[in-house]
Image (cartoon, rainbow, N blue to C red):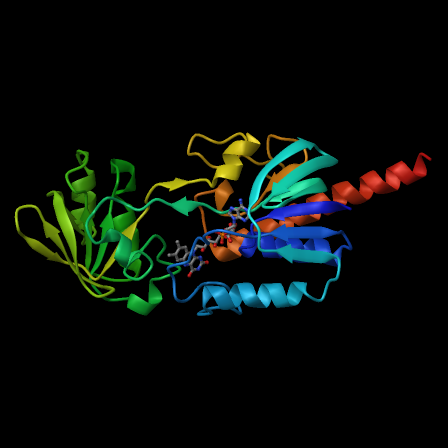
Length: 303
Ligand SMILES: Cc1cc2nc3c(=O)[nH]c(=O)nc-3n(C[C@H](O)[C@H](O)[C@H](O)COP(=O)(O)OP(=O)(O)OC[C@H]3O[C@@H](n4cnc5c(N)ncnc54)[C@H](O)[C@@H]3O)c2cc1C
């Protein structure tokens, strides 16, 4: 059997794409395996109708709703690679090879973390990347922002929307440009440029940031935009990446640089959020469905 579409990745983007294609009567295989982006998070916020839902419940509901569509199959398998061309792809999964007319890649990104003692255990509990996702619940507390370059410094000012107590840390990793320190000071943000020794925690709670000179800065929630990488299959597909490392897609169709391969969700942008990813998945599915339907109808008409 040749599937109309194989979707790689069953997060918000992949689930949304499968729903739209299922409802459009396309035969769909959704392959999902491996770590999910927000694995460390207990609740997912800022998704209308799902605010506060545990991420695994969100996925479970998505799968339950897909079960209404017999033309959608879900397999908990890892996609190892894809060969072939648009209309005749060969998808290699663990233990099988599957034929597909189109591919939608929804594999998310992997957060690499930072080499600071205490970072890994606190990720998703007291260290976050997005105040829309994890801001309201911890408003008016001691927040920190770990800037990784001068261009990120003003993010500390933005965090003042949630709390008056913001410290921007540079960890002495770069020079603070003249003017940036004044802007932060004028905006009521403390700038801390001394090297960081480690994060001080009590269980999953962050208590403070310990500096190398022994000083301790109160900080209960730390925001950071850490490095991210793609899963292996994205490299294997040879998709063009932008200068920040995200998969380049056409804004309208979400088709990548490889004809017949589309991409949706975190792997295409640093503007990351579950509802954005779901929206991109729906958009990609709509365009793939249009493409496939017109291809079939035209082929029938020309017979
Ligand atoms: C700690 C944390 C908390 C967050 N909290 C929120 C929040 O509260 N609200 C919010 O809107 N957003 C939140 N986000 C962001 C949100 O999780 C992402 O934007 C969203 O999950 C992206 O969806 P996606 O479908 O693009 O990717 P993902 O959700 O990462 O899903 C990708 C899927 O692809 C699968 N996969 C990867 N490679 C393969 C392969 N080779 N074969 C098969 N399957 C594969 C993975 O296993 C995974 O299931 C949070 C992120 C983090 C890190």
